[in-house]
Length: 322
Length: 318
Picture 1: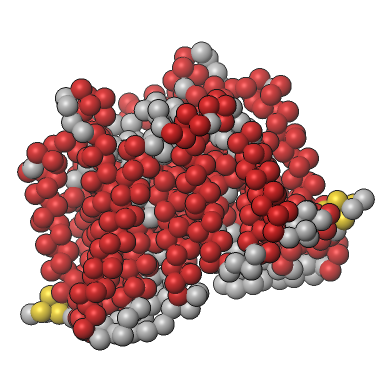
Picture 2: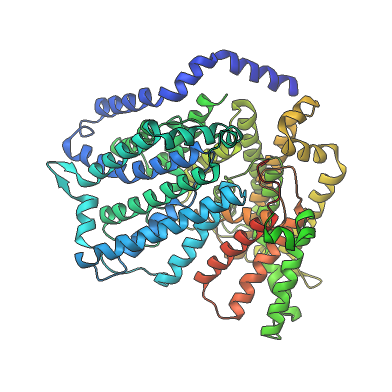
């Protein structure tokens, strides 16, 4: 039994050289995504229609924003399960006021406050108390859920202010507003991660926290900052998603915690930390949405979407493992 | 060294069931102070009975976590098995026994499949079981989009029946827990679960059969999920495609409360059982205090945060 698995394992590792594997895990997604788009265009004529493309972009934007935050957390060896709960909380707050544009500043301030609190709690538990990220963010997820239910008494009501409706589903020169926001977020955080000293520190802390510590890096501060980025981006994505959906229940954003992790994993962000890119995570998010869109366009039953997601997770991870 | 660490030195050293037993005592004292019905026999049996589903599913989860892994497919597997149970029985008493056996076997096989993927593809169990969870949920939705089938009336014996005054389902969970505890303590394979969880590489170098350990652990977890699915069908009278969703994450709470380290290698199932009782007890107490269901979630999250903050002693090594 053991011998068999050992043979299998060595065979698996020999099948692809380490260098090829490393390349695949970094750039594989940039082959998969175009392939999916080509297949979509070839099979269904409506896939590349202007309407479908802009619809797709609108769906990609919230997930892309969350995935950018998730990337930061995963690079420092973490995982943020609280993002979906944060999104739903932001959405509930967006409808919690009069529903007119007068309250936009108030809503943004409230969401910012809660996002910062959540990020600080997550970061504190992980960096200062040594709690496993999975558990810490799970706890804040349940906590937020509880506060949300208590706040809405189980039945959220009210309207999304027109300002967020525009952000979530409006267009400027044919380009959805939420995509513009996504691009700004991506550009800003790409600079932070790839071109700033702080970004370098993030990679060092993720690659080897002890090295980071010995280099004089405040590893706890870096870790907490990453959780802050993640929860704040989740809050932003929640506001945008509430504008896209237009109505709010307690579960807006449900599934985004796992989807954003999947986007990162298939985009080459390592679960073990220390490795990953924002471009990869964004391509991962796009892949998920394109695949989901194609399942519907090809007339396949909705269940296929869910199963496909599972298969993609396992195979992408298998491709990159090692 | 933090304040909590200084205040509870024994609690931190005994990261086993002791902490959760102390918490149970505290909750009991609080409850007794609030209302004299809280510690009545009827209410205690009630709490015991209501812990069944959580106890069953988190027993399997404990094993997975002891090896340093996690089983995120439990929720979908519970949904799938519960739908299959009521859908296949469909009110026919003669089919009950074969279907129950088949469902338990199916749960075990899916658990083994999880382990097989972990071993062969060399992926972290978190990813494998997450993927499996989506696959199973999709499959469940192919089979049933809403509540499906029904079970004979006396099938609810599993959930509401009593033997000598003891609720059946909850007692099955206790028996299962004792069996697993004995296995962990006295069988070589049980000891090896701890070895694999504590240091995977060292276990491999020592010549331990890692793949057998993983097969056992995830197989057992799948079996526990199937048992939970059966219990839920007995309780609600029919399987539903989303009945298990919440268990994926809630099954982890009793494990952590019971003192099992999420990094693996430390803990046990007895603590988990008490963890499930603690949650059931707290929910019961909050019901007595007329606190709405929404605040019960907050209480649960605060308990988790409290528990992990007190237990975490092996920081940096995890």
